[in-house]
Amino acid sequence: MSATGKFKIKLQIMCGEEIAMGPGKADLLEAIAAEGSISAAARALGMSYRRAWMLVDVMNRCWREVLVETGGGGRGAVVTGHGEMVLAHYRSLQAAAAGLREGQDWQALEQALRERPQR
Image 1: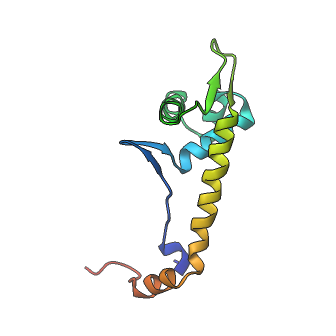
Image 2 (image 1 turned 90 degrees about the vertical axis):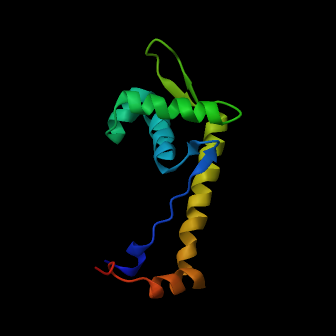
Image 3 (image 1 turned 45 degrees about the vertical axis):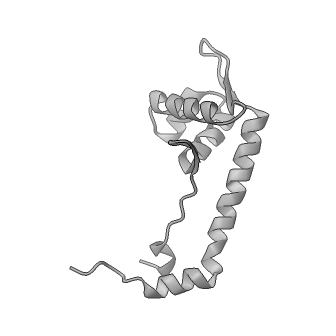
């Protein structure tokens, strides 16, 4: 395993006990924007429609404005302007977090970490 493979930064934005935004939800938003529907986005990501719909529901309930609007009756879905803004800022935070690999703290922890746990 490479040294950079030891650390994983997973950015989650919480709303009470719910994850309002995380890596999977961000991927789902991008897939909805690309595919034009929740069901097509779910297929593209290899998840069930029910799971995708539940993730969209949580996102829409957590943010002050909905991130995904549905047409109803199988007429597709669209990521709103607010959804695009949230996604852009989230991806920017992810990029900034990835930049931590260059810092002294990262390197110090990397050197202090064992390759595998002791038995």
